[in-house]
Length: 463
Image (cartoon, one colour):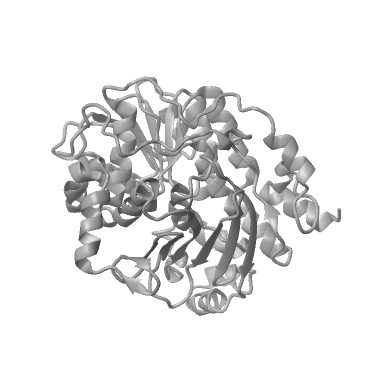
């Protein structure tokens, strides 16, 4: 193996999974990792009940401050601590809490101060909303200090980090859930229940995307402290943000719960915009000249995944083309087809014919989950991507309060995040197929989906 290949593998942590050959990954090396039994299967693990979920927040940028703002509407929680390196973001979060009963301890200024928050003995859950490179180190540190973890997407950047999350969660018996809000969008929840009740038939193929022109915001030092997201897109070429499309696809296809991801191929276009923007901005601000003529990731990345049962998932990622925002959720089953993009969500049960608005409404009445009937209206009013953020947080808090398994677990966080380095490897090797590690170490075959249709005891209420 030449030196360039060694440096590439070391950089992205791919050597941890035995990917050392061109084309397909070394299947023997992968098998050696995936056939060992897990230390403890977290798939259906129910931690002890928490009458009050005591939360500490690390990272109070756009996502973190929004998380603090919406959680105040929940019963059965207490905000014990908040942390950000910027005092301005601390002040913003405190303004969101003004008039509430929450008076959190604040941590700011020091790059390592977040560790002090994790070390407290009066916190049950650490909510992490920091730049991507910090997600795994913070999550593992928190779990090792006895805390459950909710981490923004993606949960990890390398395969080595994915395994670190899995090993730490199994060792500590602490939940590590990636906060993928698209899994809780109202249409995704509707079609999930339809699939579980057999309405869609056998799911054959799904599609998802993150297409959102945020190219100029990458160069915004205020919104992107340290220009961290620009640096990610400057040096890495692949699908860097796959989970918005992959999460809903995996949940409806029962990935890690009877099926698993096996192989991915990935292809990127060249960059046609970001270098031009760098040149334009650097002409006015020479400090950006370091980004001119850098190897920016291609505008559009397309990745295709095959599952153990022979099903497929297509994902696309583009944050630097002048296209309207799109998450393009598509599900193709043997009995019905569902799709949502910029237009209203649609369902078809016959070839080429969409159901009428009346027929669609009837399906909503039949297949909406009970917990969404209970809190969906309030979630929409509170907001957060149309209410999906509230549903996501509400389900997690409710499960923790009642000692129930979480809908998603560390194996999902690892598998969905792994598409970042795997797509990079495939792109760098001429779109060669690469194997997806089995982070469940074989337990996927017997794991079962969490039944979200059952109301477990007394549910907490949104005020």
